[in-house]
Length: 313
Image 1 (cartoon, helix red, strand yellow):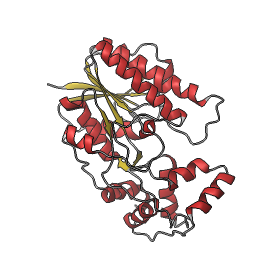
Image 2 (image 1 turned 60 degrees about the horizontal axis):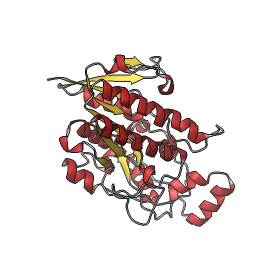
Image 3 (image 1 turned 180 degrees about the horizontal axis):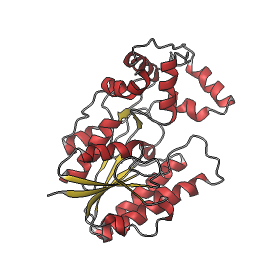
């Protein structure tokens, strides 16, 4: 029997990939929601801005599961006066309104794309799914508040909620700092990151999508929180070397001491960017593997090859 799966943010970085994976299945009918149809490809429906949608019911008819990818994304420097309030409008209030109407419409499962930032910025050991939340930034705070609201709604209504917390997601067309780093490596720009000995977990887009689809289907996913990752951690220096290798280029990395980089970045108002490049952040995906019988299908090196492919054609 064909099941209908609603995907929000269906033309975004993650949402469009989820749509592609679901469309390739013969037993799932994906319903893609976007804010506006202008420039959107494929069979999608427009719902407007999440925080102003007054009625989700027309989109939820016959839907078995929701994969909620849409969100106000993390930004390094927010120009609004109260960033947390803006994040809450979209990531908390709009999410819970959608989820409540989904429960009322008889949706069986709600898969929520959260963030590893819910657990904190970094720590000496890898994060576990059971670690206590410690969000440090408005974006992560809003994701944690949404998680709590969804859990309460699950207890109240019986709708199954699944939370997935990814670290940095990379892939073709990746936004943010990672996408910019790829462009710099492709252009042969010298980077002062040749002496960074941190450890970072990442998750390739294909691996995250595979996990999200598994969370839609697997009976053991109900009520669970899962960490996502490739299963291999690397330093920023090693990551850039492997990116260059995937491009068949030479990495131009200058070995500047991390302490010097931190000081310079702080003076330039780029302290947050430096933290993301220099600090460690690891995740332990053992619980994800054991509960779902899941293994990341794409290796880090293959994921990087796919990520850089648009830049080396």
